[in-house]
Image 1 (cartoon, rainbow, N blue to C red):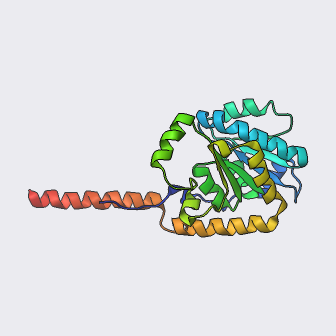
Image 2 (cartoon, helix red, strand yellow; image 1 turned 45 degrees about the vertical axis):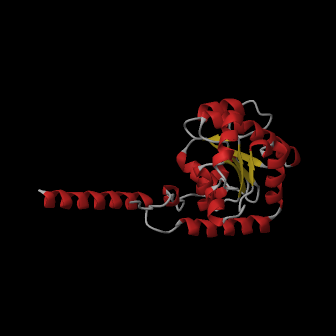
Image 3 (cartoon, rainbow, N blue to C red; image 1 turned 180 degrees about the vertical axis):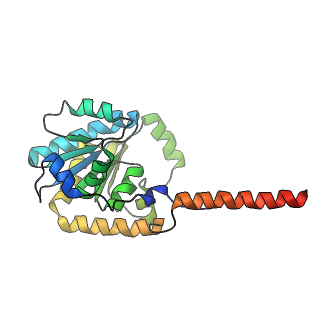
Length: 235
């Protein structure tokens, strides 16, 4: 028997996030664009994904000097990310404080994100995004044989559409990523449409439903109770 409990990421609460606090922390004035860059939480992702993201950011900064770059770094890779970003020719704010991360998610004009749980969290925060991902070439060749979905982002799968554009493997280049991000930075109406579509997809995923952790606990307790009754009857 299987009990569907939902995605625990849907329980993420951004009600206490304060975009003004993030703007003050990084020195961004009201109305200035903020680009969130989220290159992943695993060392392999930093190695394979961050170079393309770096190239995209460089292209964007060349055209938009006032664009603020914020990198909410996962604790697992924060040190490696900070070391690499330190060599960038422009300022990028690496954030590790959890409250400021939430503030950044809500404050973002657009996000450039590695595929993963963070895309669901960004959608919950109302941030339109562009998704990029790379894995080892051999692993990718094997996955193509078994994974047939045209989408890899959970809310895209739920929507059965590219609500957020995805650039995977050889398509994950700085040029393509920068173009997709720039399109959103330049078009508030496009951002609004994408955010609305993301919200509709989150609803299909169960947003606003029972807490998945509580649902999982209840399912386990129910199973244990049934087994206890069965054991007592057999005795």
